[in-house]
Length: 218
Image 1 (cartoon, rainbow, N blue to C red):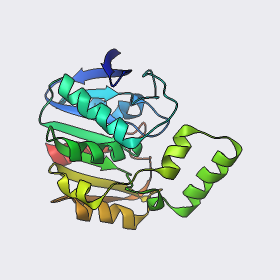
Image 2 (image 1 turned 30 degrees about the vertical axis):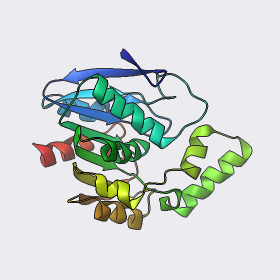
Image 3 (image 1 turned 90 degrees about the horizontal axis):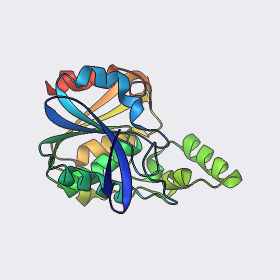
Image 4 (image 1 turned 120 degrees about the vertical axis):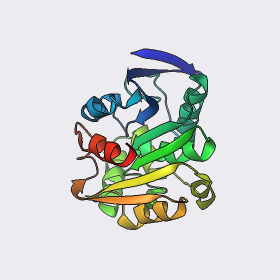
């Protein structure tokens, strides 16, 4: 693993493959290893930067989490590494980070946002209830993040100029209406609802996401 100092924190990342740069960002409570099976396919076509976001994996711990700060980390990473024409692949929290980051920089020219929501109410009620119950018994900053954020505006989504693919499983934790709205607000975005898939089944320790990306981007 390599490390880089950003915003007063040390972030860990791994680089594999060759070709166009691709930044892959995991979800809440995970680390870069969730993409391992898809990266086996992607590394023949892309230089894959697999990063542990702040407070995750081997990156610096933090006491509180905010999506915009995490997006700023990723934009700064691209600047410090001087990466351009970047494909950003984000899952769940990583998808939220990708939406915000793509609104901040033109370095991201392709965005694949998997299972992302633009507001807490975009989560299905049963999942929000489980987060509240868990947080009642034991406060957790990662649960608190999902309960209070994000708040992605129409203007932010409309600023995204990257070629965007909005992905969600048929049985996702995100409301279908929320996924539809994100795709509708981003100029020229495509939406793909994956039959029979859950929030994470096509991403975490699966090569399905890699196959979708290769079919769409190569």
